[in-house]
Length: 161
Image: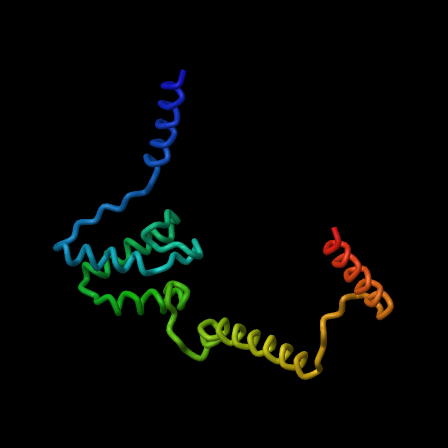
């Protein structure tokens, strides 16, 4: 029974692999193959949000891989291929978009928010120190005196066995 379950689970695992799309392109050299791999791994799939073209099974990713292959075969440089894709799909296809006026908030917004939060906490702490705010125990003066007496009597009771 155990072998049957193991066999079925292996069969199910292989079914998923059998349906995976595999691109087979012929390259003139290993350097060109390495350029192709580098490009498809550093460009983002426009449909999949946070997945590169190499890992995506989306139809547009397949088309982009084919387009990159055609451009490599035509002799385009990496910069020309990237510029073509950015012109067509925008800066979204880049995992590291360039720093421009449009992307300043994207690049420096998180750091500015963090710095603003630290400044706000610093101002609050300084104001409280200047105001001399003490931690309130929630007891009135009479209750604090009564508590002090009880604690004092308890410590005396411990001393006298």
